[in-house]
Length: 142
Image (tube, rainbow, N blue to C red; front, side, top):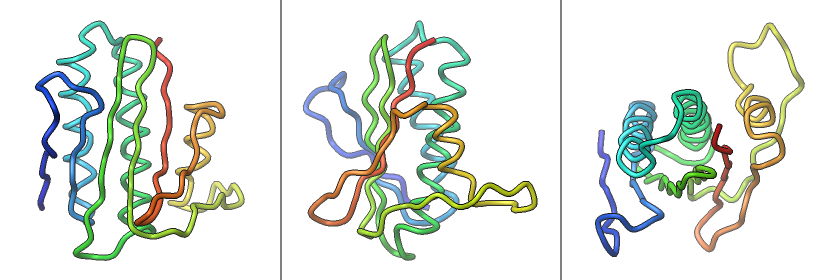
């Protein structure tokens, strides 16, 4: 697994970026990156806020690895956080936008966007990028 922090303009500059290999193990590295960033740069963040950010990160990175990239690609995690909110963006090379699937209790996967709807209540979306897309979500501080 490769997880490469991209250089920032200063040690406390925001947003912070992490480059990840397009592989399932990168989801864990992404969560660790987000947890460490919030502990260091937003020390007053509630445990509920941190947990929600970690779940959002897991869903976004998992979607990107599973549907937005191929083995050997890099996925870019961009994190911007302050006392009011945390924004998680995941960039991947595939332009195809994520789509909601019909809700089903029988399906073991494919619920990521429904989870974003619940956790972020309309504060998530997709932006086209020159080399693919970015799926982003904002979690309000609690």
